[in-house]
Image (cartoon, rainbow, N blue to C red; front, side, top):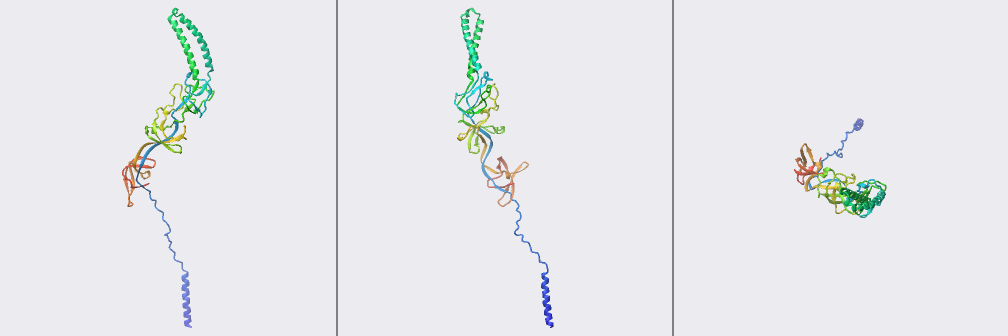
Length: 348
């Protein structure tokens, strides 16, 4: 009996011990950090020192004009204020050399001419009588009558010329590229009625800034972008020689520019689709250097007057190297001293 109680107590003691262990809190489990990626420290880009052809360009807008181009206008001041009776051309129309372009209303001048011719017939009869009496006349009086007769004859010739000038003709075959006048308008000597051009003889005309003009010389190579439809090459033919916008006459100024006011670029292989007035983009190569040692501008560093780069060595180390820089483009800098092709520089 005693042995049974002792065994029962042992079983109960073991049970209590096991139950007590289950009541204690679990030990914390360590977190696995192996899956977490730490942020990478950004590495600055490295660029190889290379060689390339460096070109310095001047770019600006331009347009196609005709090398045979002329403003249409009357030249006789005697016709100032006369009205255009008839226009025989229209904008965009073609004309032949010598074709009548415009005609003024000069009926009053024609009437005056008829009257003067009748008066001249009377003067001729009177002059014949004067000549017969020459020996009886005072020499000075005879000379005065002779001069008056010649003046009358010259006035008729001048009036005939003015009437003839009222009919304006085309100086050459071409196309009317501009027409500002209309029937009924009063004309003024040297005031353009329009512009006539030969569409088969085209040249690139530009008006670059003064700063660019100082760097451009005749013969420089030019690249012409035909509004994104292609690129052709040409050469600078001439620089502007006349900066004043006038026609060089006393009859008045005009806003129509002449070719000598443009920088002209000759192009031999313009496409057939090119027409006068087309706007273009021109790039003139101011300088070109073959096999220039270059680095990206982003690798260039300056502190005060010092210009340097960081060179990345093969073993991973970096060192500062002072360099001498030549010309620069929008993306590259030429290195004159301090680096050799194949080295690597660190960007910023």
